[in-house]
Length: 522
Image (cartoon, rainbow, N blue to C red; front, side):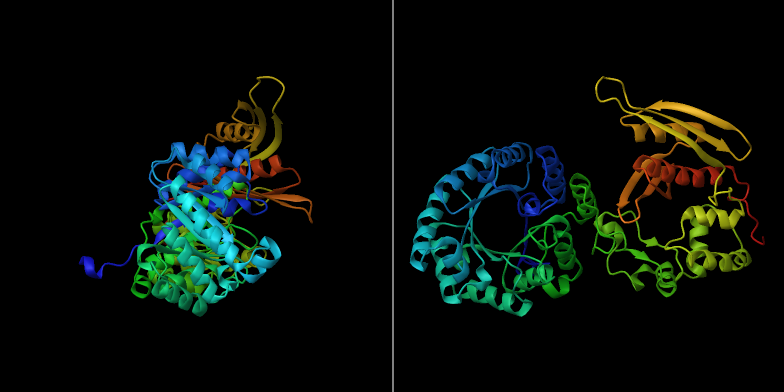
């Protein structure tokens, strides 16, 4: 492709650590922010808005820490349009090799009259003087007319021109309250980039909120109107309903380059790891139906879809799971699944069975699927082997006693004492230490069962209305993953029970003569 026809580069300005962290339930400590900042660096984002330095000493310290450690992206701090804020922001980002100060002031009638109590002329004067001051404090300055969408167009272009004349290199047009539409914002960006004096010397940026569920669509429409920077956040977190979701905007541009004719420099295989990292440090699970990174994004339960995906995943998937950093697509077995999906899962678990065996199992599978939301691998092992304990779980081991201890007053390491019973009557008790009592319990279970499992994912959800904890453990044994689910009143009991269910699957495959040996004609 020649330089003349190359797709324009759209910068990704990530505000997870600033606007995202301002959302209730997403506050992060400095160590947590560093984890996310490293993930953003690995994603190869252009700019990291690391915080709002003037907001608190802690926020300033976090911005400075990120500026010292993170290399690659430009490090940015937000500042209100006053000298004190700008000085605080400039100090915080000073250690960074590439730095930016992002300053803003409201320009809409509501902001002018209700919040600022300033006239149009007073705001324009402040933009001219204070953006110029910001440019003397930092080499790269971005300016935002807050609530731009609800600002009179004639006045908005005056504010934009004042900031450009004062030296701002990036002009961000924020839909602060998620009010705009795709047609409106596309036309606005085309108008500003085509009519503002000095527009050719700056990058126009878009910052959309999701109050009406259109943040991603509006951001992409702005790109079509001339925006060359998208302000977004991992998992779409942010004030109120959130910001434009980075992974959705990035993958839309990557998947539909033919339409948007623009590209980013994001390493897309790092999208899912970044999403998981944010989820873990904020203790906010990724919704199952979240586009691009949700558990269901590449999962299929309907039989027609499963048949198509097993034949060629392009029939129902427009992206590769691996392209966003997910291990693979997922066939979820449930009441809508067909024989092709069941046979594929049986084979994936290491069993070699005939078509007739699948026919024989299928009615039992359907009956089981009607009683639960999802049929687990443990259920499939049980159906194939015909083996199950009294509690209905596949595998030879039963959990009999769990004792956990963590002493916070001395240096004693957390430990767990686990008792389990084998179907052959063998009863074993093992005590192990660990980083925490649950970690110690997992080690004890592995020692008892002689299955070297490693926890890959542990999801715990407290259902207050039912007074229970639901746990799901994904355990890695060799090159295979096993999933276990359990419910209990206590968090620790649920976690250990789910781990045992997963380990039991591995134990069943390890000991069952059926695994890998079932005759084709069986």
